[in-house]
Length: 317
Image (cartoon, rainbow, N blue to C red; front, top):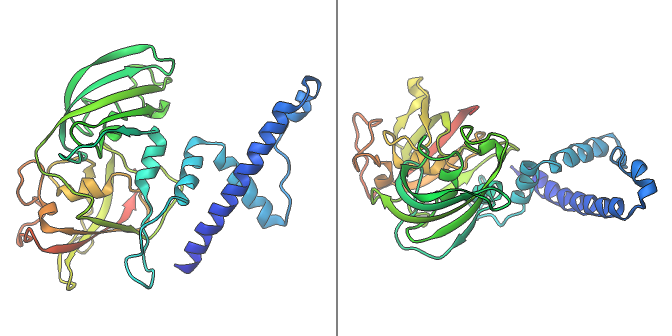
């Protein structure tokens, strides 16, 4: 674990330095006289150092040329929560910052009812425009977060909102609805009018920890995730273990048939390593019925009891 933390710190430092060098290099290119542009526009300068240093520098430069790469490394240097224990066996990567970076989300106002999670039915007032502010459509819409009823990307911008809040976001080309134009990015303005049902996963009640990170796209509403899950009491008694039964969970993020904590915890999860969640039994209930999820056939978890839930052995999304 210490080696991983050392790598993260080193990567953050290298990122900062490389970003500064790239900015300087871009400024120098812009300041170059027109007659010299052809020379300046050639390949990036060869990094200095030994073979490992050169290879790492080239890798980071290539990653930083992509929006997702820059967002990933910026996320590494966001403030992180305290480790699960004093020994530092686990740490929390604030992946909400990664999603905010992908969709360039800005939130306005406060609300007391919520937050909305994948699977919730929401009513929103929205405006969709091109990047040059040409209106495409506007109105009010009611849909389930993660369903086909909403434009791809719209659900992910709304997740985490409270009733009465407004948000602005940017939907990149890869998340745009193919029926409109797969090669066009959009801007979205949305106000959340209502959330149904009135069953919410409160961020204050739930603790989430990751033991591994990766340069990869996180799970979003409507994505299919395949994984093993282990649920146990604080004393270590296991009440559910998909690996032991040999049957992985394969679910759409937002599927109401599964415990609401599944969709809540897996949204923004980069599908590597283990995500450990500490939550009460009430969050093991289904959003669809407000009752215990179908995965529990024998034992029904007590609503106020705390459980440790581990999501692991992910397959690619």
